[in-house]
Each structure stands twice: as structure tokens, then as C-alpha cells.
Image 1: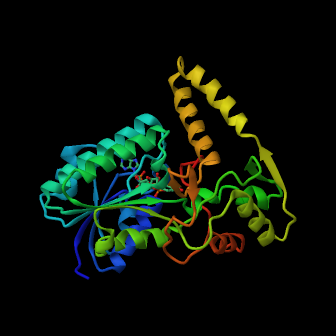
Image 2: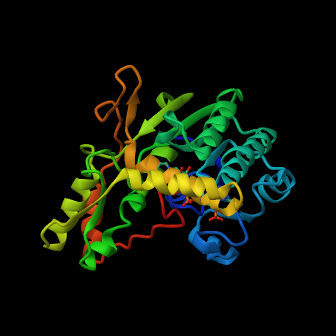
Length: 330
Ligand SMILES: NC(=O)c1ccc[n+]([C@@H]2O[C@H](COP(=O)([O-])OP(=O)(O)OC[C@H]3O[C@@H](n4cnc5c(N)ncnc54)[C@H](OP(=O)(O)O)[C@@H]3O)[C@@H](O)[C@H]2O)c1
């Protein structure tokens, strides 16, 4: 493996942090371009980011500003690879287009000037069936990257552990596990932060991942929400208790917020978040077989070794904490 100079955007996010750790383990020279106040709720100040990324160089600036990218980020130096785990933290249409699309275009332009020849992009498996603004924004950048002439690895990941851990606390508190329908409407192959970080970093040196769109999940069989709940109750030594929520409830919320959003713009954003919630309540995070009109767990590749249920065990025993980040609906 040849060590490369790697420029990372989105380093302070859940997968970004895991990816930087993997890049450093791989012996690469890593520069992370971060905001002055980064992380969930802007909790990380510059010095916190520097501590978090010990072994890497941390530079501070604005990824949505071409001048800042060039002046504060690339600094006129040469780089080999751009790695992006950058993504809108809110999922609202305006933020998604500003970050998942426009900021990425700016970073790609600045990277080319810096001599970058290879890009590794974290995307999401759900863009294969795009219904939401953030999915269209991601797809628009994927297309620009594919057409850029640079070598690319577009990693379309399945569900992250944090997105499947939101109910641990309520179940521990004796409340039922909430499911849509019978809890078997969807399934996913969850992937851990570190396994995904390792996979992203590994794209640099693996020619079989170059110039490819790569759907990727974690190890083992696909898991439904009902199975997640059942496992949690088993780990807690409690009898399973589920509360079924009809998908039609989400439809009503979307319709009402959509109407009100025409006069009150903040409610239009809330309507989009409800649409995102509905999407994940009804669509699986697995490879979509368009010809057969169904999701295909067997066709969804796996990487890594850490399972969601191992993670649940660690959280229940107090050995890990379930930080959900800003995406209450993801
Ligand atoms: N959640 C899931 O289950 C799931 C599944 C598959 C794919 N995905 C996709 O994976 C990607 C990354 O997810 P994640 O959970 O690691 O994301 P995350 O924790 O929300 O991190 C997002 C990163 O983007 C940066 N960012 C956002 N807005 C910014 C702005 N205006 N200016 C500068 N930086 C900004 C954040 O910086 P700050 O720290 O400064 O905010 C952070 O580094 C997303 O594209 C998501 O769609 C998610």
C-alpha cells in the first residue's frame, strides 16, 4: 500500500470520524477540513477537533465557500485523494442541496486544482429509489462525480447502528418498542461505523472498488424492526412488547404539514422530515431489484464483522453509548 495525501470533508460526522481513524491506521497523511464549531450541536471547537484527529492535520474553514476551500483547506498544496463523508445534518431540501450537492461540487473543483485524481464518496443506498430532496441532491452530485473524469468510489451504505438505536432508552424505561405495521415491512443489513470507515478507506487501494457505485451493508442476515425489538427485549431479560403504528398516521401528518407549509415555510421542512420518516418506515435499506420489483437481501454485499446485536449487547451492558446525532428521523 502506498501512503497518500488525503483531504477529508465531513470528518467530524459519525462515519467521518471512523473513516479518519481507518485512514490513519492505513498510514495515509490525512488533512481534515472542519468547521470552527463542528460535531453534534456544534460542540467541537477547533482544539477539540485537533484532539479528536490526533495524527491528522486539522484545518478550519467553510466547505460551502470556494475561496475558503482553496485558501484555508487545500492551501495551494497537492493532494492525491478526496474522501467525503459530508452530508446535510438536517435533511431539509435547502440544506441538502447546499451541502450534499453544491458544497461537494465546490470541493471537487478545488480538489482537481490540487491535483487530486481519486475521490471516495459516502452516499446512501436509498438513492437507488429517490423520492426525497436529499436523495435527489446526492444523486446529482454522484452524477457530477462520475462525469468528472476522476477515479471514483461511490459507497452507498445501508443503515448505521445509530439509526437503529433510538428506542433502546425507551425500552429500558419499560416502554413498548414502536413498529410500523407488523414490524416486518422493511429490513436492512446494518453496518458499524468502524466497519464502514474501514471499507471507505480501503477503496483507495482496491482497484475492484474504483469507478464503481458500491452498495454495502454489514455482516449477517437482513434484520427487520420486529427482530431488532425482540433482540432488545431478550438482552434486557423482558418479555417482548410492541406498539404498532399505522403508516397511514404518517400520511396524515405529511398531508397536514404539507398544506400548512404552503403558508408557513418551517412547516414545509417538517413535512419533508415526516416524508423521510415515512420512507424509512416503508422502504428497506437493501439492494433494489427493479426487474423483480423487490428488495434483495442476498444481492446486498456485506463488509466487516461487527453486528448490530453485538452492539445492542454492549449498549445494554453500558460498554457503549448510543449517540443518535441530529437526525431524529434517520
Ligand atoms: N444514518 C444512516 O443510517 C445512513 C445510512 C446510509 C447512509 N447514510 C448517509 O451517510 C452520510 C453520513 O452520515 P453520518 O451519520 O456520518 O453524518 P453526520 O454524522 O450527520 O455528519 C455529517 C458531516 O457533514 C458535515 N456537515 C454538515 N453540514 C455542514 C456544513 N454546512 N458545513 C460543513 N460541514 C457540514 C458535518 O460537520 P459538522 O460536524 O461541522 O456539523 C459532519 O462532519 C449521509 O450522507 C447519510 O445520508 C446514512
